[in-house]
Each structure stands twice: as C-alpha cells, then as structure tokens.
Length: 289
Image 1 (cartoon, rainbow, N blue to C red):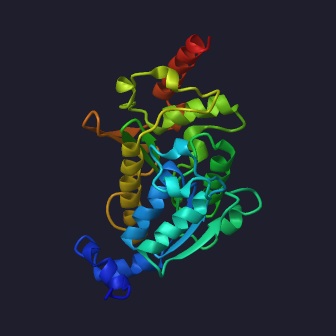
Image 2: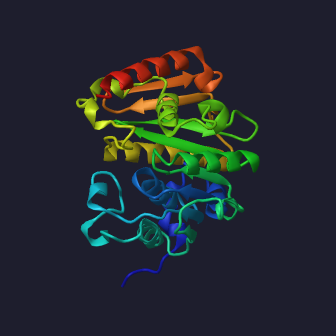
C-alpha cells in the first residue's frame, strides 16, 4: 500500500544541507517564475524539489516538437498542451500540497503587479527574445525591492546574474532603454556572459540569427541554469552564504571545465563591454548577407 504524502518525508534528504527550521522557511516562501520553457520549467521543478511551497508562474505558450531537445515538460503526450498546465501538473506530482497561481496569458501590463504580489523572489525563465516582458518585470522587481535572478543557458553552461534590492538594477546593467530589439539582443548576450566561455566551441555560427530570433540550445545548459539559480535562491531566501550582486556575476561552462567570476562596473557601459559590443556588431554586419 502506498504511503500518503508527507512534506517532511518527501524533503527529508534536504536536511543536512539545510536545517529543519530552514526547510520550514523554504516551505513558506513564494517564488515567481515567468516563462516555463527551456529554463523556466526546470526552474520550477528544481525549486519544488527543494521544498519551496508557493509559486506564481506565467506562460502563454504550448508545447511543440521543436521544444523536445531542452524543455522538461515537452513530450509526445504533451504536444499542443499549455506549458503552464503541464508544468503545474508536474510540480503537484512532486508536492501535492504546493500552492501555485498560474498566469496563462504570460506576464503583461495588466497582470504584472498581481504576478509579483507577495513574492519573495523572482527567477527569470522568459525566452531570450522576450525583451519587453523581461524589461518590465525586472523594473517592477526593482521598484518593489524583490530580488531577481537570471541564469542564462549558453552552450553547455550557464551565466548567472543576481539583481538585489539596493544594488545595481537590470536596466543599469544592460542599458537597454528604448533601443531596437536587435541592439537589446546584442547587449543582453554580451552582458550576460562577459567571459564568453561558450563561444569557442560553437561549431555552426549560422545557427545564431538575432533578426529571426533563433539560436541553438542544449538541455545541459538549461539544467545547469536550474542548479545554479536554485542555489542562489536558497542563499537569498535563507539569508546565508555569499550572493554576488550585479555588476558581479559568474559563468560556468561544463564543456570547457571552467568557472569564471566576472565584474563589470557600469555594466554594458564598461569599456571592455563596449569593445565587445563593437566587435559583435562588426561580426553581425559581416555575416548579414
């Protein structure tokens, strides 16, 4: 006979790395995740297994065959189903007591305040090219003193930036303003990973096309993102351990077996970043034909 669900038993193996009291703290925390695709879906399931008890999640998309290489909710049986519905179901299979509020129209001007209401932490899971939604969400987090994490899957690794209350904001770091989407994409890519550890082993550069909003991806990158972001979330929510705030960041690349801490005062205004963006623009212009 199957034993009934018990929160204490389900997450007992976390104890040792966290105390019983800390596990209770995590149970009461509320985390918001916008986007439940490549990184967002695995963020939700990882944090659910950590024992986080409350979530706000947002996604308007449905699963497609093109998602199979990296999205944990994408299977033959979920084709065509809303990502939010599938991932909420998967999270509740891990913890039937979990409290999840789902925003099935994604994050937008009409629901952003409700999406962030009562939230202790925001974890970014939006598509790389969701510039307007990302810019608005991070700005709202800064205005409401909500810590926010972005962990980007780059190649077979992850680049992590934390935006904490009272520290440098997302806008101050990336310097997006009212620039074009093409320029925002370039600044986001360069700003996420100043070390650029992933660039040397890209075997087919033609697969990156910012104008067509497409690029290559791997499940390894997404899963490494979730592990890194969940660890940052634990430290922030329990208020223990070193948390690097932007303009500090780090990139770990499993393919190259490298971990690099980065520091770019001024964010994309830093001279090294400006040089990197200039070179990237030249490469993009040369590849345009």
